[in-house]
Image (cartoon, rainbow, N blue to C red; front, side, top):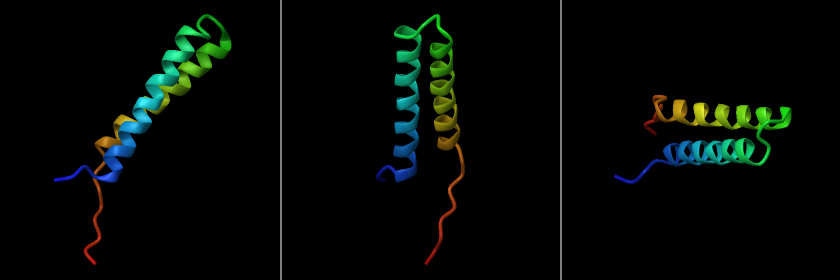
Length: 61
């Protein structure tokens, strides 16, 4: 069975969050802006993972 589009989107959001978190921690680490960027990235990771476990609703048409 092929991967559904929602699963792929969830992985993209999670990966993007990981990249943003990494940039915020390494490049901007120790600053208030860095803390904000890390929080933004962690929020994307959390939302991407939660989206993976959300039940899908299929319309039988």
